[in-house]
Image 1 (cartoon, helix red, strand yellow):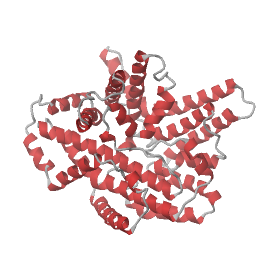
Image 2 (tube, rainbow, N blue to C red):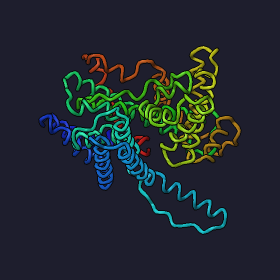
Image 3 (spheres, one colour):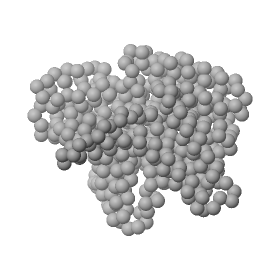
Image 4 (cartoon, rainbow, N blue to C red):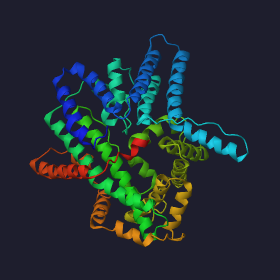
Length: 468
């Protein structure tokens, strides 16, 4: 199920909230679990079976790790079994076809017979709920969290529908106390509705139209230089407002239920360096990669060369986490190299002597180049697109016609609004912290209605991060 559909907005969410607030507090986590399974199983019912299996298994491993009298060897064995099981399932569903196809290509290249490849369906959101479970187990092992009070609490944490399929990645230790007891006030609920509306508007009114522009350019054969830059700029806006919009909606839904999720974006395109960008973009993933991968590898404690290598490895795996494509590995390597260069320079911007707006602009251009790798269908297509950006490729025969579909008043207005919003210091997450007044209601109500009307006019367009 998707937040931006009439089924969710007019059926699932009202019914869920009606039952939720009618139940005694001790039954609410069970209702969250059951309703979240319906939400998740709406695409494919068997996905629920897989999630339930891993949830039950990880709950048992957590009990083994924290059992009184457990030896260090038993605890290490339980952690290893959990990591192997979770990453094994994630690896099979997410990377089997990529690995098998690559192996077949290598076998064909040396003249050896290939083998049949199974068609494996990727369960939506498996990367996110796998990370939820893994961080729970690792935090238990390190002594950074206490075990879940009950299977109901743990299953509600894993299946919590607001952040189930596209994050943010939430650690159990940040929700443990809220799972046990949480308070929902009128002001808190209103704040949740406000940030949900803003996220909904970001997705419908900004991300989707920007995506139309990006799709047209990336799908064109040999766009002109200007159109190529407009296309990658539109994609930068699309992926930001799409994912940030989803995160805002998740935070808003959680707040309606009494949960407080951490902010996942902090004006990332205002960053003055790639290092700063990763402190502002997908913050929940950045901190997970730092705490559970970069620091265990040694962080910056083993000398500069090892530090640069650790940064590169972390970003390569971060790219691979996004999907089984060479493009994502190249995207991760690109960011890892820039992080290493900036670390070598003392975490400074590449040109610290430039004024701040110029440093932000330079970083933004570097990010635009990375989005080409992220968006292109394959590395060959990415190379062609880089050629178009630099004017090194021959424009296609239909290239002059592309401008007619791009530069419509609607598209230009959307891109202008996007450009203005991404460089604003005040974000939606900050704006809703202030008390809700009638002036704010007067601003939010027509915004929601406009987004609702646009939703019905648009074709089905799920969130980009559903594929990860």
